[in-house]
Image 1 (cartoon, helix red, strand yellow):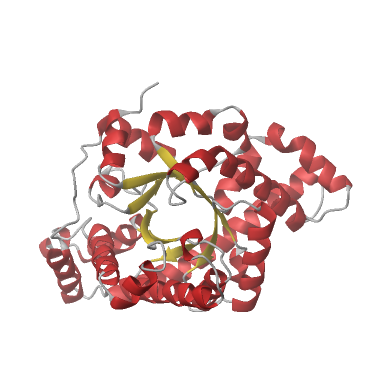
Image 2: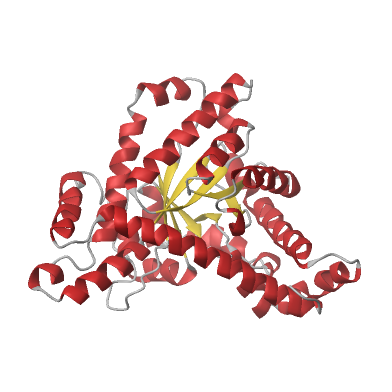
Length: 371
């Protein structure tokens, strides 16, 4: 079947569509391959919640392997690693042709380090290497959180040739730190004699959670000035991140790396499913169109864009000044970007850990053991 025209238009505008979901049934049934052919899906991201849903709702697909692992004496964490890395490896194989056609830019599948390590640099570095070696596919991305402790882990991973999906980014200032970590990793990789063209990274900027937090504060204020700013913070924040990305691409530091074959770290819009049902379900896609970005979306958002998305050629160019003014106006009401983003990072780490523990409990129950 031909590709969906709206999703094809989004792809033609330069946005790489990635699916924020994965499960073994989707892999084995050919459903993932059909999304590549019919809905322009060019990559996949995963997280503990996604794997928990996959294993709890698709138990039959995992039952035989899970039983065998349990019988062999594998503990819960070992079982999780085998199940999840097997799924990611299989998805990487489905995307290998696209990875080759795109010269290693797309066709990527992400897998996350244990979120309990978010503030443990050295163990994160070690586990990133283990995941990279276990999946053993050049188109895998290892997800490392953009915490303070995660930044040196990003540099270390990149320096050894590991491609990284930097996750849990909220503030533009932290995004700049992430960019610096990536560039430092590339510089170290070059010094180590590695081919820079084989290394890539995306910087996952969480979008909808910004609006959820800021809108709640605005509604608490309940003033006309507050009401006028509802639903504006998240898109403004992402657009400012894009402006920072363009600054990087114009820098001498980046141009020197690009001359050695380095790939740009693409901004990735994550958490693009709307949390407020009053909002257009396509807003975090159609309002963040720019050539060279990634949008990873849950299937519901993908379907909404496919059926009703109005795709512009570019919806970010020329928006930096107005986007900066949104935060100025919010600050005048007592809603400060740094405060919002620090809170969301703390909550994000906690939510990731909670999701990991839920995954462990699901696997333990299925294996008849204790988490």
